[in-house]
Image 1 (cartoon, rainbow, N blue to C red):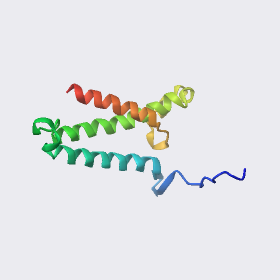
Image 2: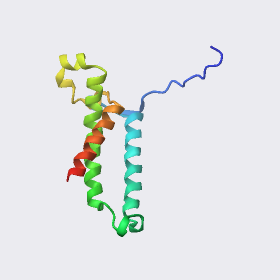
Image 3: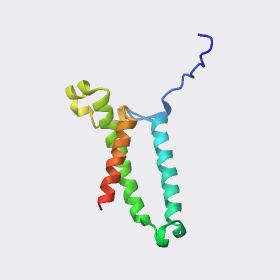
Image 4: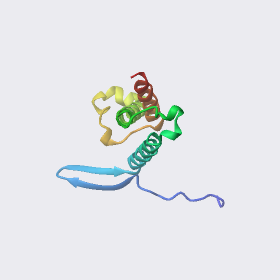
Length: 128
């Protein structure tokens, strides 16, 4: 095919190193989540610090509320992303090997599962 744009052969791993018998890897996917979380946190923190943006000059949350929300969202990303991968992509494998479900370090996260986890975390946070 002459008009195809070649996709570069990128490794999913940015860097990996071995400590004893354990290999630790930083993957591009995880790095994207971390950068997204940090940028979102900074944007929201700056917005709640400007009372003039809000009705009656009162922010809808405090910095402590933002930190609580961030904690729940990170948990939602990790738990939802892993469960999404397990349920959407390889349910039969994980039904046969349920002890592998929490092993997030082996890879296998789903964006749509992480998104659903964040929605649940946001709804949970709103109930408080």
